[in-house]
Length: 54
Image 1 (cartoon, helix red, strand yellow):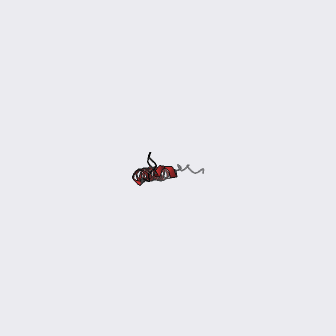
Image 2 (image 1 turned 90 degrees about the horizontal axis):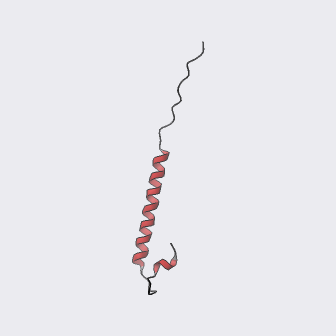
């Protein structure tokens, strides 16, 4: 997000859209974090036991 996003088309300071865009970006980052955590919390790989040689 750029500093120019704080101003409307007429050049006046308008933080309403700025805060809305910021909140959307935060929500997207939060969703990315949640999906990354789900992928990393998989079950450990179970290695089958080999029959011992006598």
